[in-house]
Image (cartoon, rainbow, N blue to C red):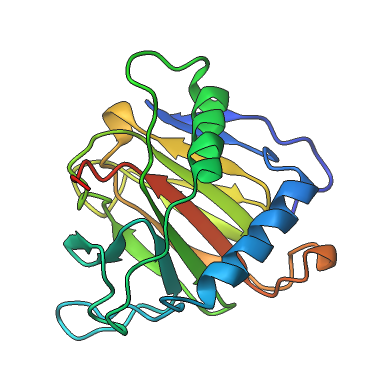
Length: 218
């Protein structure tokens, strides 16, 4: 790992895809870890999502606002326990707007209004295959926050899962936003580096919080 040796500069990885290292303060990271623990206790707990062809994702996921399962969003977790999904809090909307302003500068047009969060927990051996975030009806940017262990984030193209792609090291506290021409780019996590989180977080593994606008009616 080089994060502690050399400053990491923000970068536009692709048009509309911006990496901002170290955006979350240590205190904000700790607050988010505690919030994720609360959300993970229910009403819908963390679960391994089952894919349509029978496979099971290695990450564990809990959702806010809307419950995601492959190809659709619902208000109840019918594939878990049937409970209504936890509400999406106003303070998380505000955080998403701050993140978008940091990545793109002062936002223009309609205010960013995320109404769902997918919170993925990666144990040391968890991975995420290349995929598109395309179950939303909105083309608003995706805001991604990393907490805990460092990972390799592979950000690709909008046509297929293969090359060209760029591997980005995401460290605890990093912000990654993708929208515009890169909104539907394929992306994934081929590797997590276990034991790289700051011990003061009290977290073993990696949390990834993605904020999105679904474009769905309430």
